[in-house]
Structure formats: structure tokens, C-alpha cells
Length: 174
Image 1 (cartoon, rainbow, N blue to C red):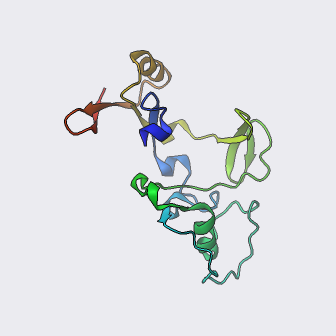
Image 2: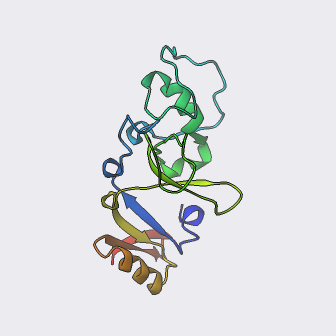
């Protein structure tokens, strides 16, 4: 996963406390983290839904978790090809309806919309206490680590090292 998400080991992985981040709150998450385990499949399920949808929701406008729609949310937000199963990914899904600028607050939380490329990114504002640690990749420089520690010296920092005989990534406290 380092190659896909952390700039070939030059980046960092941020450790989060899902409760402190608000990712387990059913009132502000369309899919709370404790319901967000990704399902890895060989083929996408396109058959009829087995669930009965007695409570109405509008995709793109529902800020809270509706258990009756969980099967629908799994198909829409929690399905990924089997090749990615090694990730053991967990997601929280938030509705961004009404988020249109900087420091915009909705039922789902506070967001800032940034435009780093062709598509806008809705950056969620997390409480600082939700970040509990940082692991830097094995190609991160001492300057990278120093810059991170300057921002949050109170965090636990871990560094990745390569175990040459086995090619395993080993994590050591820094």
C-alpha cells in the first residue's frame, strides 16, 4: 500500500482515532466507520436488492446512517475489486451536500473545498486529537520527519524499514 498511497515510501501514514474524528457518529455519517468494512468482490453485484426500503433517503442529500439502506450503501460505497483485499480497508462516508467553499459546516461536519486538479476535493476538518500517530515511509528524509515533528511534536512517530532478507516492512519507534 505504500506504493499506492504514500508516494513510493516517501510519504507518511496518519493514524486516526475514528471515535475522536467523529467517524462513528450515525447522525453525521452516511456510513459510520464501524459499518464501513469494504467488501472485496470478483464481480459487482448487480442483482435485485434483498432489502426493503421503507424509509426514504436521497443519495447525495442524506447526512445520517439509515440501517435499512445498508445494502445499497455497501454496493455504492463499500465494494472494491478482490485484487485490493490485502488492504483490509474501512471507510466512513459523509454527505457533502451544501459544502461549497472554505470552512463550510453542514450536519456532516466542517469542510473546505480545494481544487488541486480537475476535480474538487472536500477536505474534512478533524479535531487535532483525532490524529494519534504518524508512520513515515522508508524513503522519507530526516527533513521530512523534522517538518512533521515541528507541526505535532506530541505524536507517536514510527519509521518504516526494509528487512532485506524477507522484503518485509518493519516499523520502529522514532
